[in-house]
Image 1 (tube, one colour):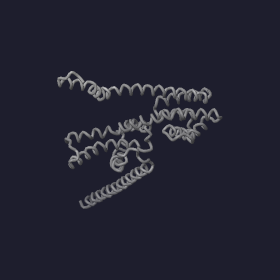
Image 2 (cartoon, one colour):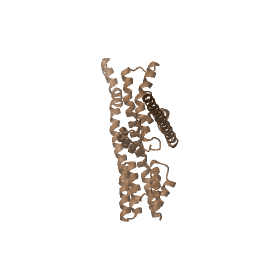
Image 3 (cartoon, one colour):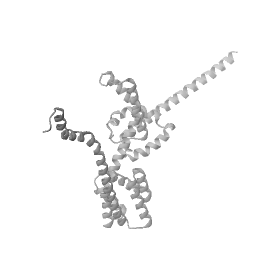
Image 4 (cartoon, helix red, strand yellow):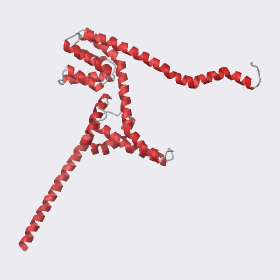
Length: 307
């Protein structure tokens, strides 16, 4: 019986040491994983440019430190990652926010907005019901989407505004004897900085690392996701594949882009005229009617016969 007891004790001690060794190794691996994740977060912060949104800049240490590790690598967010990856690229925010950071920002605001509302209510600065304050969490989830959409619209407007000049510069450069790559280098060097110039710079980088000219231009069109740019890129790819004169094509595109801008300006002017009717009817017309008919009404009410 003593020998059996000693054998069981030896087995128990062996299991204990095995468990302790496994626990120590697992804890060490977890510490290394946490250190690696922290290092990745630190490197991401170093690589990111200064956020253009003040709210992102203010809350970034919080959502990157606490929320990003919770969703990093989780397959549940893969569909959202793919969706917002393209959106961030189109908005030109890929150097400011990673996809995980953007998703963490949305999740963080669900809690951040109600907390801020509760603090303001406790300080008697905000007079709102508790239900309304809690509902601001919904606004926190959707606010980044509205922000990024407005960013895309603003970026597209800037590109459309600079497109005619850039196409003219490309046409002049190619007609002066430069090839298309040389003309794009001239645009990047001489044109006023704009989102479209940044995209041409990225296009040149992709060509230098081995992408074909057609593939690099397709990637540029996919990043921008703008009908006018897509049409322009498609014509350039076709001309390049068919061996047509790039300079002539660019000159035609320049004229077409300017014509489109004039048409859009006329539409905007006509739309502005329609929008002016509402304040005209509500504010100006009553004032004019009061000035014209007011004296007659007063005279009639006083029993007079006129002026």
